[in-house]
Image (tube, rainbow, N blue to C red):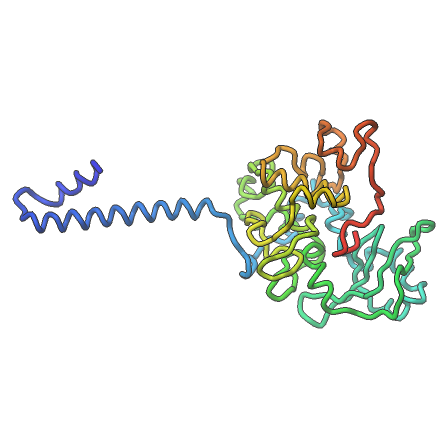
Length: 342
């Protein structure tokens, strides 16, 4: 107010008619209010997360570009990383290829298969679709033989056929990168660096803090939970698209503004342990900013959960382990959810 008064005195000289002076004073006050409102709005916008719901996904640095510089610390292990192999070309799974050719139920499709989804408990076979950025999935459900891991068993009855909708409407959100919910098409098979690190500023080579989930950038438990949860929450649904995966989520957005999931205690109590420990941790990070996050137990680049053995025991551990001897309280082969069979 004092600044406004000084500005008024400097503009309106002594002896100016009262009515004219009052008009000038009102104009100055209005300008001041508009400037203040603009500053407040800018501050509010800077606090709000980005929102790509229903919008075009941004351009991003691809994994191949990332690995050019990170070839020594990431590239060597990334070839066998579970995120990299979640959807892989058939040529990268030679044992699977042999099993397909030797299985009478699958022989008619063997020369058409181009991709394999899954590895141990459950496998599916895919081929490129005539639609851009989409895949067709064979309706046959497969599993590794418990007696011979190089042998594939068909776990349901035919006749089988290629389905053009299932992968796009159920699987693509977690097994490909940059899925556009508007077209249900993706930009890259498997999980690329962009899925976890978001849009990377090219200046990050000088300032690593510009990249999400790096050691140089502070990240909240909520952000970690949302980043992992975009794929590892299998019980959610997008309000905007109705699909069981987030609508054009980019790391840094507010996942839960569109992706709806029941994280109530009653629902968690009925969820199988392996799924429940994921949901419970994400809930704690979202609601209570718990210091214990997915990264406390898992090394993503090395696809290892060995870190969890060094975590101080807590109630969260006892979702999967017995308190007295820490033995697992569930069967590793249990199904997670009907969405994908894991």
